Amino acid sequence: MGTIAAALQAVRERIAKACAAAGREPGEVMLLAVSKTFPAQAVRAAWLAGQRAFAESYVQEALVKQTELGELAIEWHYIGPLQRNKTRPVAERFAWVHSVDRLELAERLSRQRPPGLPPLQVCVQVNVAAEPSKRGVHPDEALALAWQISRLPALRLRGFMTIPPVSQETEVQRAHFRVLAQLLAQARAQGLELDTLSMGMSQDLEAAIAEGATIVRVGTAIFGTRPAKDKQMAARSA
Ligand SMILES: *Cc1c(COP(=O)(O)O)cnc(C)c1O
Image 1 (cartoon, rainbow, N blue to C red):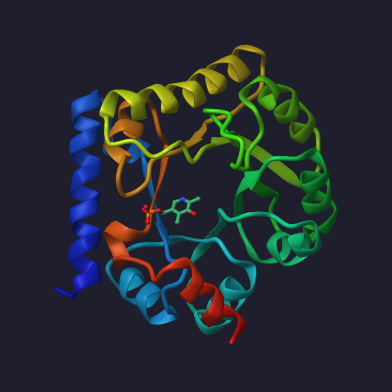
Image 2 (image 1 turned 180 degrees about the horizontal axis):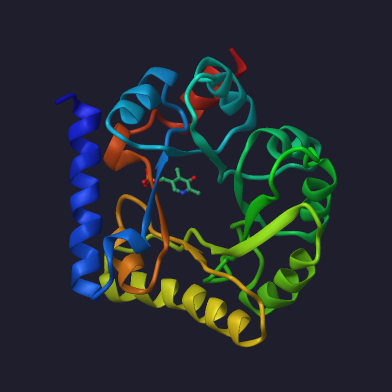
């Protein structure tokens, strides 16, 4: 078995174990493979090992990879920063967007979604610890934004996404994920038909699953360590 196939298998086992510990079915948690900075060849290796949903964070890089892998029926998810002037390719080339944190961006995505495609599946990104430098809507504003987005015609709002502060302590990790789970519960109690909590990465997927994650976004544990940020930037502008 190749390195990526073996790593993927190990991640699937972690998910199954975390589900068992939480009294949940493994089928309730979808594994999203985060392939940003890794070449099309790595995506192909994961595909051959049975992985079907992949996530990217940089629009230009994603478009190149999608073209190279055009013959594979991959479900592409966009999880990176959304810029106003780059919403069109995201609306056209992805099935899901996890990083919607402003109504204006959602409106653009809805307008730009090609009519022949199914609605774009979206999550509202929430800054659960209200960290000053981080993207995402403040938890106090998340429900109002969710209601507004739920009315846009070419989008289907599925739930919430977060990237919590890094912590090694399970209890701290879980407290952050719980903020998102409580938002989902409140939204549903208000009548929004949502089913998705996109939370948990390589370091903390167990804590996320314990708090109800339905999508875990895993990069490093499948593909290995990414190059440093400045190398990425250099590679992209080359
Ligand atoms: C890169 C990234 C991930 C994957 O993180 P790992 O720690 O490599 O598993 C998940 N979510 C988002 C939004 C990311 O940008």
